View: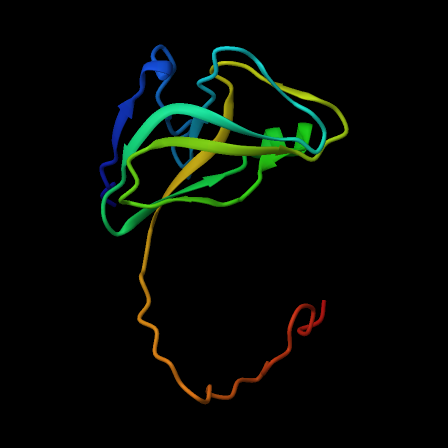
Length: 149
C-alpha cells in the first residue's frame, strides 16, 4: 500500500521536538507533541489550545484527523474537545490541539508530551442532490436509540 506524502514544516517554537512518528508497525496514528515553553495546567472542566509547532501540507483527497490518545483519556480524563478535529488539505497554519480535562484533577502538559494522535485519511466529497421525497428505508425516521440495544 502506498503512503501519501505529507510535507511537514517545523515552526520556530517546535525546534528540538521529535517529529510525529508511528510508534508501532501497524499504528494508525502519529503522536502529536506539545510545543509549549512552559508547562500548561488544565483544570477540571478546562479547555486549552496546545500548539504542536508543526504546519502540514496534506495532499488533496486526504484530511488529517486529530484524535485523543487513549492513555491520556483513560488515565487522566483528558481528550480532544472537538474529536475528531479535522485538518483540511488546504490548511497551512499551525496544527493546534484543543484539549479538555474531563477528570477530577488538574493535569499538566509539558513540552514534548504526546497530546493527541494524527490520522491521515482519504476524503470523499459528496454531490448533494435536493429532492422533495427521500426513498423509504427499514429504519425510517427512527432516531437515537430506535434500533434497540
